[in-house]
Amino acid sequence: MKPHLTRSRYKIIAGVCAGLAEWLGWDITTVRILYVLLSILSAGFPGILVYIILWIVMPESY
Image 1 (cartoon, rainbow, N blue to C red):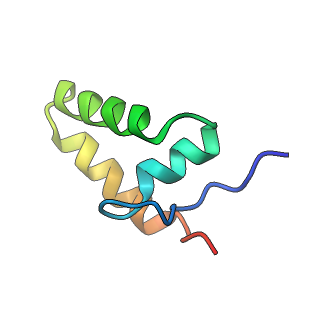
Image 2: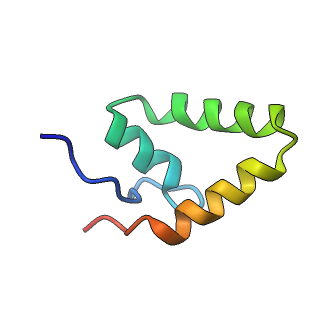
């Protein structure tokens, strides 16, 4: 069974990318790099907005 999507304790800012990596079963560094690249390629603003929304919506891990 797949774990619930939660913010990770292995965080740099809020644990959103690490939580996504744990949920997907991917390497944390890979997800962080992909997220930064996606944010830059989308002119930055949408990536920052999505990160803030996920920060608010995703519960913190226990």
